[in-house]
Amino acid sequence: MALIDSARQTALVVERQLEAMRARAPARGGGTPGALELLCDGPGPTFERLAARFLGAPVGQPILVTPEMLEAAEEMRNANEQ
Image (cartoon, rainbow, N blue to C red):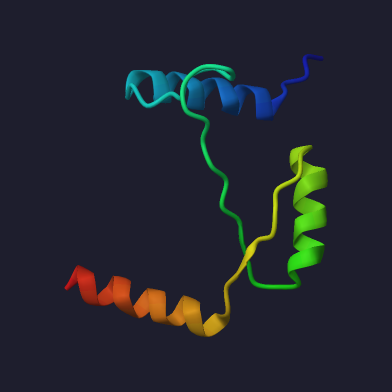
């Protein structure tokens, strides 16, 4: 029985698509590094701790997003689509 690592397969597909779009970032150590901006709708310290463990590196404090902010963003998006 062959086991397939779906995360690896997904990463390979995304890599090919980014290369086809010429949107792939340079390898680490070259070019400008990207930025990570995290948003959460719950306790920031808990999210920060779990995100750092999941990503394997410190992530910094996330931006708190309230339900009201999400509703306002949805209303703006809907208004711009019309």
